[in-house]
Image (cartoon, rainbow, N blue to C red; front, top):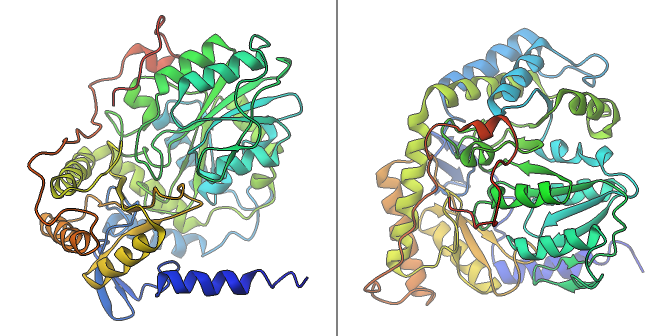
Length: 455
C-alpha cells in the first residue's frame, strides 16, 4: 500500500464535514490583540490564550524589538554550546522565583518543556497521568521508559487504586487493559512491583474542560504513596493565585516540578520547567529536547521577561480577565448553553455532534466571532465543544457581540431553546483566596480525609 494513500480519503471527509476548513486559517492582520482579519473578514478572536492581553502591549513589543536590534534574530546554536544569553538566565531566575522554586530552564516551546521530563522516567519507574493532560505530557512518557497508568479525569479514587496496586497492596485488577474512556485513549491497570519511583502528572487548568485540578488531593495521595507531582501550569500561570503564579499558589502548595508554556499569559513563544536546582541541572544535561535544539530566540525571551514584569506589577489585568470570564460563562448559561465544570477563562460550550460543531464554527465566523472547535480525538464523540476564551484586552462591547452571535447561532442549530430558560446555575470563577500560607514553602501540610478541590 502507498504510505500516502491514507491522506486522501481523510482529507476528502474532513472538507466534506467542515465545508470550509476551520483549522490552520491564515490571519492577514490583527487589531489590538482582540480582532483579526481572515481573508478580508474581520472577526473578534475568541480563541486566543493570550489571557492578560499582553501580546499587543507596546512594552512587550518594544522589548522584543530591542532584543533583535542587540542580538539579532537567532543565536545560531543550542544553549549548551553558543546560544545562551544573560537574557535567558535573567528570565530563568525570574520565573524560578515567581514559581517558588530554586531554578528553572527555558526552552524554545512549551511542548519541549514537557518533553524535558523524559530523562526522569526510567526502567522500573511508574507514571500516573490524568486522562485530560496535555498531549506533550503524554509524549514525555513515551520518550521515557517508565510504565504509565492513566486515571480517569479528576478521579482521585481511581488514582488511589492505581497507586495502591503499584505499592503491591491491590489485587492487580484495578483499571482495565485497553479500555477506552471515550477520548480514544487506552487506560491500563496496574501490575506494578513497587520497586521504582512514582510520578503523578496533571495539568493545573485543563485546556479543554477549563476545570482546576484537585492539587491538595493529588499531593496528599503523592505523600501517602511516595510519589512526586508535576503540574503543567500553561493555562493557570498568570490566571490563578494571589500573584498569578498558578495552581500551586492558588492552593498554597508547591508541586515538585512545574512546567508552563510562555505563549499564553506571557505573550511569547517558549516553555519553562522549574524545580530543585539539582534536578534542573540534571535535566539540562540529560534531556535531548534541551541539548539538541537551538536556543529560544532573543525576541521571544525578551518578550516573556517584559510580560512577566507586567504580570507581577499589574494585577488588574488578571482581575479583568477573570471578570470577563465569569460574565461570559454566565451570559452563555443564561441563554441555555452548557459550559461544563469550567471555573476559569477556558470556556467550553457543549454542542454535541461533530458536524454541528463545524457548522456552528462556520456560522459564528460569518457572524464575526472566531471560536475554537474541539472534536474527537481531542474530546470524546458526543462531547464536542466550541472553546471560547476572552483576554483582558477585550472590551465589554466585544463580550456582548460574542454573546449575541452565540445566541443567534445556538438557536438556529437548536443547541439552545428559542427563548432563554427561566433559571440557570451560575458559575463562580476561580479567584485568589488571599495571601499565601506557610504551606507554599513546603509540600502539602494537610492530613486526614482527602477532599474535593474548591477553586
